[in-house]
Length: 87
Figure 1 (cartoon, rainbow, N blue to C red):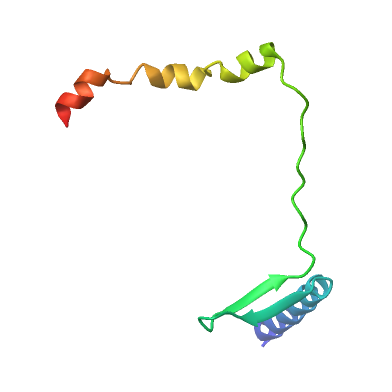
Figure 2: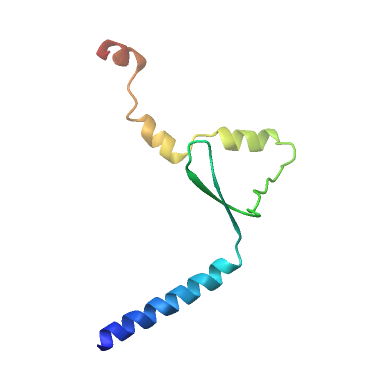
């Protein structure tokens, strides 16, 4: 009997917590042409973009420089002629 009581109390507390957390969010429920239900959050956060200034030549070279992983993977790369022969 105590297990059932604990389960019911846990269920009620979980329901209360979920209702409090979801009460602040608003959703629009609609159907599309295929009669599928679509749930969209109202006031979704917009993605923020950060625009950088001009890139200097040194920064461009740093970006294009192969990383250690790329150098390691190049050791396993087959020459182009062997790939054509295998096909």
